[in-house]
Length: 349
Ligand code: FA5
Image 1 (cartoon, rainbow, N blue to C red):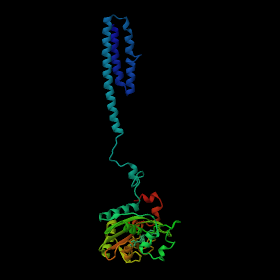
Image 2 (cartoon, helix red, strand yellow; image 1 turned 135 degrees about the vertical axis):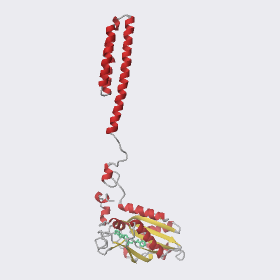
Image 3 (cartoon, helix red, strand yellow; image 1 turned 30 degrees about the vertical axis):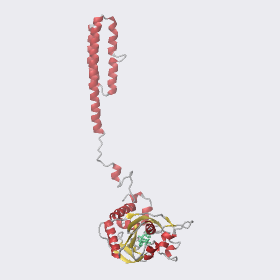
Image 4 (cartoon, rainbow, N blue to C red; image 1 turned 60 degrees about the horizontal axis):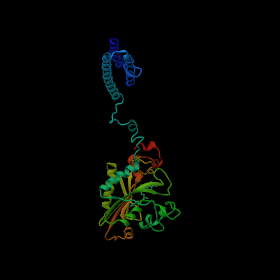
């Protein structure tokens, strides 16, 4: 019996050493198996109990229980230690700094995976913010229009050259793709009551020979104020505010008379070309100036066809060429870049 007890005590030292040497949870499970498993060392000792007296059995059983309790204690301590060191090394190797910008976002402005808005959209949104802060509403109209909204209600005579097939895309059903956002002036006058202030950004189409400053599909932003008293002074102040806000500084402009059937008087507002700084290039056709902002006071005939009395109501309107404005903003030397779908171009903005 004394032999069995000292055998059990020897197992304790052996087990303690094995537990201390275990490197992970798997090794620990193996230790348990080796000592208290079906074929374990303690199980082997216990098999010899049959030859002992009941008192001796009790004494050996007690020693075995002490061993098991000790083993459990050592195993639990080691398990705790292994878990702690595992997390300590995880914190070192898998440290996550949430304040660091992921590499693909910092390498390319705007990011490969997130993308960003088109430069024309960016300027359009900036303008929308400026105008809504001045009390303007943003309105929309269809891109496929009828002759009345694109021409007739805008005081175009039947023989006006802009009605010519060369400028306008017609559909087989007798509709057309709007050639300007002035169509939305008419739609707003039909659905809103004056006084009113609207802007209408949108896509327009022209049967046009494409070059560095002309596209067949481009963007305009219409603006219109209808009130009891509207003057050229109001109009020019509006244009000035618009340009200063977009460019963040005063820009060189020139105003000259311009003819549009739906305004009287009408003006062409040109910007000094910022691609060549006025020296002359393919964008400004070597003139140093770019047409961006035609405008004028709403023609009495337009008011009349909307059912408004020109003696009571006056209006001012403008038709901003958005593509060209964005070209001036960023010094873009060819309008065709906007729709080329080239990421190298788009990623610059
Ligand atoms: C108009 O379209 C008038 N509806 C503007 C207007 C509105 C005048 C309200 C008065 C009152 P225009 O055809 O000039 O006008 O075009 C306006 C602007 O659009 C031009 O100054 C130019 O910046 C831009 N634009 C015209 N044609 C093209 C084109 N093919 N490609 C790119 N931009 C163009």
